Image (tube, rainbow, N blue to C red):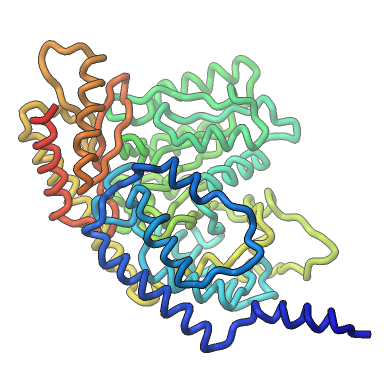
Length: 480
């Protein structure tokens, strides 16, 4: 029997079901703020985190019992929350590895989140699953993988690297895998060592191999380390190659690493989160030669494809290895597919429940084709070469790491100063440049030398902004 309280509960729950008019109003109001925000990006500070602690404390609250008008919430977000941050979407963000966040993908997310289809099991949404499978296939084609390759979209490179380690472990090692050893250079992304620990290995089982003067792994020392570990009774099973490090954009000799992996029967993984999509360009294909021989490749579309954060990918050359490492079954799930052309993504991934990530790649690709992405990447390669040539004209600037992709690392040098004092001087220089708020640079330490980095990657960054970076650098050198 339905009571009056049941009817009241039904009416209350119905508030979550919005009318067409209300939906239009919400989107229109949000779009007005979003468009104004994006249009103002070139004039926003490149970074502003002053008062960060006070802001954070002011936002702490309990779960609300009553609603707040939507315009009030938009004011909170756009006037208080969003401005206090590194402006990662702006043209002046030249730190770390910029992305950009093309608007097309935001529209795709609105569509995919609204229709709320599930791509993890093919039969549940066959069209949706196929669109995502198309995206994975495109990525495999870019890398040069064969038709039997498989992959999946992830939240980013860290999850892709973790999944690669698990796949390699289950493919190359027995159930008692604790003697397994992984290898990467001293420039490898921290997520690789973290992935090894999460996959069950002791921390000391990830062995760092020194890099050379170009910050590429020393292949001679790698071979020595593998042979030495085998002689000690350990089980080398995985080599990680870099295709664009965070520190310098270094690209390891991937062909040499592929040869070593084949000779030693090790899984070869390439972390190409930053650099992988440069294969769309002629210069990038040359730099990445050998990546097509890797057993697995990590890519981050939210870097060199300019997509919003939360878009990564893992590709595996022999797709069946990925399936064998992750396939599991439950009585409540529909029957899975034996047809190799129909992909149940839950069999290739740690995830069962997840959203339709593929649309944020598929929609902009379908709207524009590949060429605008290729042209943007070529522009960034040109810009970093121009920046480097200009830096060489500064009498006190030393290029510590010349560009291999779109990163240059450099420092200010002055005669008579110790390394410690030079490091302090360059930290001060970085602060001075960033304090002007037209650009935001980051620093790192290379062979005990603190250096500044310029990374050009955002699709919104063009010649005018890198010229501004050099102007601010020149002025800051005078100030320090």
